[in-house]
Length: 185
Image (cartoon, rainbow, N blue to C red; front, side, top):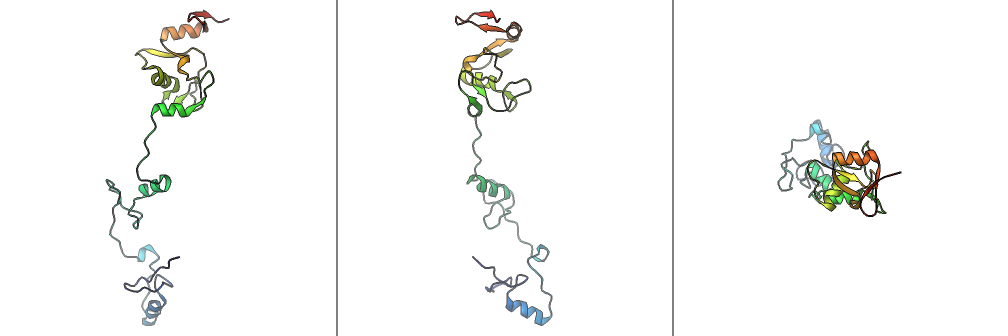
């Protein structure tokens, strides 16, 4: 355990009170001078500001000894490095949110009020279609062939027009094994 030294320049004795060693404290009391307690910020001399030592950072260093601003100090504390972790791609975020991969791939993340999975402001089933099947054409919607709104299995998704999507929903159709549609009973 290191001890703090006296506030008087050149003195290496351990401080006793108010930031001074016993020798300088007794000397100040004997001379009748008022001892400024250097532990309080209003009594300490102004220090020159030190810039953060991380390249490209203009912030003043809060942790002077380490030459780090608060943001970089906390980043090292939490992540062990000053570099920001790479953000996850949509495909990685999609894979992390899938709770079950049996038949329907059920979305385990946030759900919209309509019952669809969400990744930020996007629907998870639309992202699944774009990642695994391809881009959704303009004016098309992604239909769930399994009628499970939380499902993100690309085999259960199909890009269709709004009219076709509404027709299928209205008739509550089911798909035959040969790929044709019939009304569900």
